[in-house]
Image 1 (tube, rainbow, N blue to C red):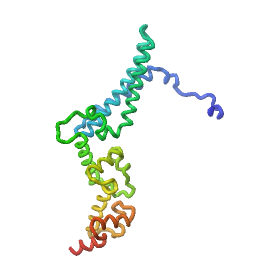
Image 2 (image 1 turned 135 degrees about the vertical axis):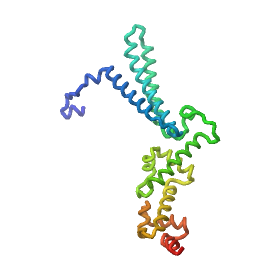
Image 3 (image 1 turned 90 degrees about the vertical axis):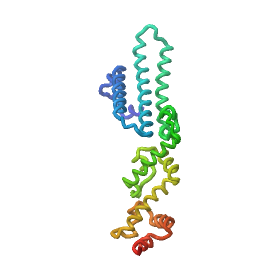
Image 4 (image 1 turned 135 degrees about the horizontal axis):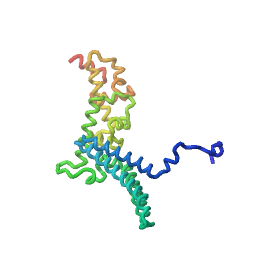
Length: 249
């Protein structure tokens, strides 16, 4: 109706006839599936628990998609035979639906998959260790977070948020929050501010450091008051007093 009101009664879509050919659709989806499996096979660095989980999760989704394509192809093959009837049609439709809905379910449950909470036995085999699967996974992920914080220093960004750090690390926000809370015993803000305070201590200990008044911004704090409160809580003195003590020592 909207298109008619605008006067667009006839729209010519290039190669529309080709897009309606089922074998062209099959070929397109088949090539796409082969490329997906090709990328998965190239990723051989699956030594860690997290990468093992991601690798198997990717293969599972690709296999489900391949099953959907196989079901789609089987219809156009079997329909040519005399034994094909409505029951076959229903079975094929059910297989296609199961594939699509299962893919959707796994995508919806992605955070739980990478937390190690969903289908542990399916995605990672049992490992006879004292630590649980979730515990070893959290330890590994926390080590990655610590390395990134120390090497890249993302905390000096005054606008750093949980979602930003999660994107940089390739985690979900739910997973990153859980890793930080469980392994450090702090929430995200306190965890990041610990690094900012350490950076402030380093700046204050340098003779060539910038003015105390600007240190808070250089290390990632947005508010001078928040910086002073956090600093005094940790050192029982102001940044100026901290520098004075260093100069006297």
